[in-house]
Image 1: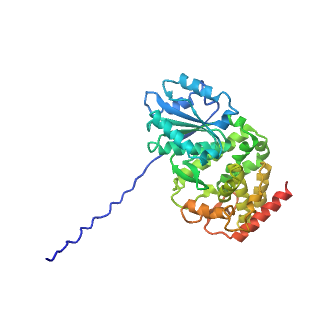
Image 2: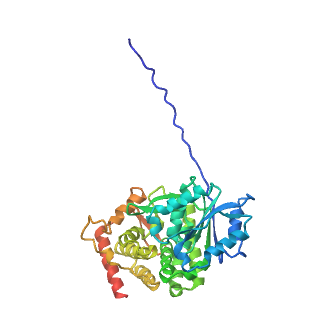
Image 3: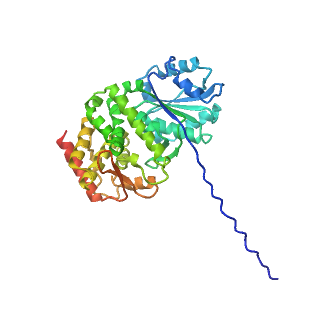
Length: 401
C-alpha cells in the first residue's frame, strides 16, 4: 500500500522585540542610618505600598571592625521607621573582600534566609559593604524568585564610584573572576560618604583607579581634576574625594544608559580599560592585590602599549604614570613577568587576554588610548609590544620609587 505524506505546512516565524525600561536612583548622603535621615525609609516607601516591607540585611564583616555601632544603628533605624521597614531577622554578617565571591556558601546562606523568612519579589535585600560583597549579594538577590529588590549601600570608594552603581552582579568560579553572574539593576543605591572616613589607606586609594580609568577614556577635564587634586586625594581630603566619586559615578551611569549595550551583549567593554591584566593579577596574587591596585597596574600597562604603538604621546603617557604614582599606586609587580617564559603556565599574564576574550563573548576587544579622554577599541594586540610595555613600566617604577 502506497502511503503518501502531505508536505508540512510551513509556519511563519514569530519575531518579537521586548523593550524593558530600568529606572534606579543613586543617592548621596551622610549618616544613612541616623534616625533623623529619612532617605532609606523614603526609598523603600516610594512604591506607594503602605504596608511595612520585609528587609533582609547583609553586612560586610570587615566594615564592623571600624563601624562598631552599625548593627545597633540599623536596628534602631528599623524600629523608628517600623511603619515602612520590617527587618525580618538579624543581619547576616559575611566576610568582606574577594573571599566572599570565591565561596558559594555565602550565596546559599542568603537564599536559605530569603526562603525561611518568606521574602517575595517586592521585599528588599539590603547589601552594606564593599564592592565584592555587593557583587555577591546582588547575585543572590537576582537569582532568588528571579529577582528580589536589591538596595546597595556601598561603603568603599571603589563601590561608591564604580561597581556599586552599575547593573552587574557576580561571583568567581573555575579560577575566573565573575564567571557566574547576572545583569540586574539595583532598586536603588545609597552612597553614604561617612563610611569612607574609616577606610584604610589601601581601600581609600584603590577606588581612585576606577576614576582615573573612566576619565582617561571619556573625560579629559575630569582627568585634569585628578591631576590637580592628586596630592589632596592621596592625603585623604574628603571634599575632593566626594567630587571624584560623584563625577566618576555619573560617567559610569551615563555609559550604561547611553552606550546602547547596557547588558554587554556585544564585545565592546570600554569601561574595562586596564582590566584584562587587572583580573589576571588579582587571581595570580590570590586576591591579595586590591581590585583598584590591579587596575592601576593595568592602566599603566595599556597606556604604555598605547604609547609604544603611536596612539599616545610621550607627554600624555608620562602624565598618566606620574599621576598614578602621585596617588600612591605601585605600578609594577613581579607577577607581571614571573611566568612570561612559560606560555602554558596558568599564571602566565597573557592568558588574561584569552580569558578576557572569552568573558566578552568570543571576540577580543581591548580599549586603548588615542589621547587623554579618548578611548579606542582594538581587536588584536602584539604580545611582543606588550612585553616591551611591561619592561618599560618596570623601569619607570624603579626610577620613580
